[in-house]
Image: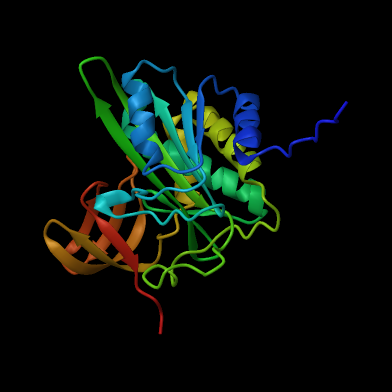
Length: 262
């Protein structure tokens, strides 16, 4: 009788197991897709349970905020989207919740402090290692949220593209821990969501603010101007000092870039 060779577990196998251990009832793990957020939207429209998760080894049209793309090369990152029927009291804070969960997971796997660049990027050693995009889904059958989180776990073999190489970084994991990371990320996201307390979350968000005290360029509907970041206000707005005084920025129409010291 011919002996069957033991098949080495694939990324799909390991990730599906890791998500099952994290309590995910529905997981879709793909070799490649245009956008995990788009797949998660379809799950939501078809009546999936909360925290149904879509993962891809590679995205060909990964999404960032304000119509930007998210660089998603093969085998070096964790590209995850989670479907959620967010309650009315938590819906305004899903990006905050995702940022806190991502920073927590980055710290667990890197062993170093992670910071949140208002409002949806996670930084490690002054480099962006993760980005978050929450999208609202409204259809005849459902209203909900899809939370997309992309994390750079390793540097690409050919390096990051020229347009992001100065700002992008990775956790620089020496072994392939993508499946383990993804399971921990979704578990932490569930924990942050289910136990969300605005006062406690605000305290942590302020402690992890990457921009506080920095001089920045701000681009909003009124143009581009320089400002200094003073604080995070009580509703997670970014408090800045401009030439004409103090103002509070809200997410959705603002782009922030740090002015580097010469």
